[in-house]
Image (cartoon, rainbow, N blue to C red; front, side):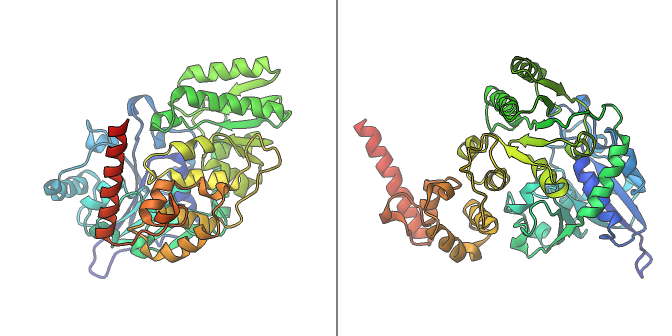
Length: 449
């Protein structure tokens, strides 16, 4: 509400996905935000070709969320012709952009509060830098919140972040995101989120509820992220089809990523037909969670989608994974922000071709802390003793596959390459000597070759 000085307060929410907008709606319904004079939802379409992909406010179901915000504005239209994912204003232009946004969005002299997703990158980071005096709250729209902050944030931004809101996707696991700034986390009540999903389910009318509970396959289009090739991802999808049919499922539904090649769906249909199963492709841009309500699937299969955990934790649907072993090996650099999501799925979700040898990780918090520290040790130096203890007691192939030997060697952690390198002194001079020695050794080996 208005402050004692008479200034109005406007809270600006930012969302780039319908899942994120639904999370915000659930947080608002749960009373996690105090009342202010005005609320604005800024939506951004970050697709490679936004003109061909519906934005958040154009997707089926958004109308059920719309009434929670006084205004809905488009970031794409505001910064046109620039693309939201690549445009960053020059530092000297930030005051000009704040004046422009205050005029374009009718903010006037209002006190502005920001609620942002993916604070490490634009457009969220750009908004935080433009409104330099605005307090910031961050909400998480997936498994990445359990990992470390992707990039080191400027103190001018990090010091203003008051809270991290997240869904309880892995019950009991506390996010590592933003903890380097002492930011506390708070869960969005699952019951509130499910009530929001019920409203979205009522608006999804372009597909029928099947008579037989199908197996639901989730596509992510990992090739577009440069994680694997298109052929490898197509083969992952084919493995999903073969795997669910081998388990006895004859009705299969595939939910492709909106920007995935259409040819993939045709290959899957041909494979399912050859195996004696019926495959339906759902091109409707609805949330996977809406499909859980409408399709009531008997099994959900994916690679490392957040939707695997919403299926399991929120709906009690059996889940299975495919391809995490490939991703654990391919993710590069080690700091890749997808590493913790892949690790969590691999550690907590059984493989589709489980032969009875799979075991669920019993200490996921310690595993995630160890992976997070190895990813970003400079942000979380206080974790080192606990990580050393964890790794020292888990020198087995099952655990060590979540780490890279060279990375452990560089950090002087248990599991390093060669016993003589298990403990590298943790000071800059010693690290430089070790790196110089490695370069010299590689040069000698090349000369011998």
